[in-house]
Every structure is written in structure tokens, then in C-alpha cells.
Length: 213
Image 1 (cartoon, rainbow, N blue to C red):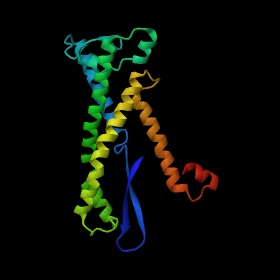
Image 2: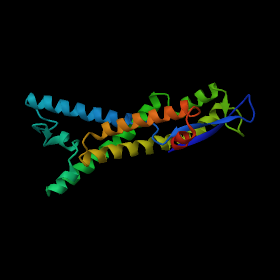
Image 3: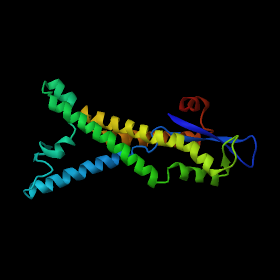
Image 4: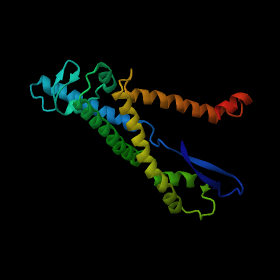
């Protein structure tokens, strides 16, 4: 799923391309950063517990049982339901974890867009440098920036909410791997698929090309 902005070459009439803006605009970078933040909180919680000052919470074995760190730990809700151990606290922990993942993903996604040159102004500069413009509009970077800003802002937020929700849902469902790891694997495979489709589409057997499309 993506938004495609129609663009034309200023020097060549009748020829144009579509500039794609992916729905998951910042990929899975936000959930990776949120997972790293949670891992750091857990690390400091363990260190503080070992030093006799467990202000971030306590661990029993590898499981956090109290404090902030326990609220940032995903309970295995599906497993608890199957075993008949599901409680209201599991639901509260699960909702807190999901909200933290989604909120953190939105925050880091917005930060990533602003610092990685993915904002509307940077994208407009790249497009103008490529000799492209919006058909029917004057060749003005500010016009292009306003058009891109209509899509990049919502895509940044909605894509972050989607990846945060998927990662949290996988963790709460007791997936074999962490939700972040699953998303990373899926994104790598999908990126490989996109590269194959872009670079080798014309060389493919017609039947395979139809399948890829």
C-alpha cells in the first residue's frame, strides 16, 4: 500500500513518473528504537536491583514482577487464556504495553522523518534536483513541499501506529520470536521483492512477471 505522486520531467513533455510514498513510511525503524529503549530500561532495572536500589522494578529470574519495568513487559495473553491463568492485570499490562509501543513508534517515527531527510522539504529538494515537477503547477519547490506535506505527515503517523500495533500484538500473542524481529524479517523479504521487481522485471519470463506484478 502506497501513495504515488504523479510527476513530469520539466524538459521532456509527455514523459513522467510516479513518486511512491509507502504507507509504512519509516519502515520498522520506530519499533526497533522502541525495543531498544525497553531493553535499556530493563538493563538499568537489573543493575539497580543488583545494587540494592530497585527503583525501576524487580526481577524474578528473567521476568519483571514489579515497577515500571513490569509494565513495559509483554504478558503472554493467549497462553494465559489457554492455561486459564488470565487476569485483569494481564489485560492492563497488555494494554499499557501496546499503548507504549504505539506511542513510542509514533514519536520515534516523527523524529526519524525529521532527522533522516524524509520530511516534505527534503523530499521536495530531491525531486526538484532530479528535474521533476508536478504536472499543471509551476516549478516551485514550495508548491511541491506543500503537496508532499499533505501525505507525509499522515503516512508517518499511520504507518507508525500500524507497525507499533503489529509488533505489540505479536508479543502479546506469544509469538515464537519478538514482534520486532518478525517485522524486521518481513520488511527485509519485502524489500528484496521490491528490488527484484524493479531491477529484473523486463528480463523475467512473462508468466513470472505477471505473478510478481
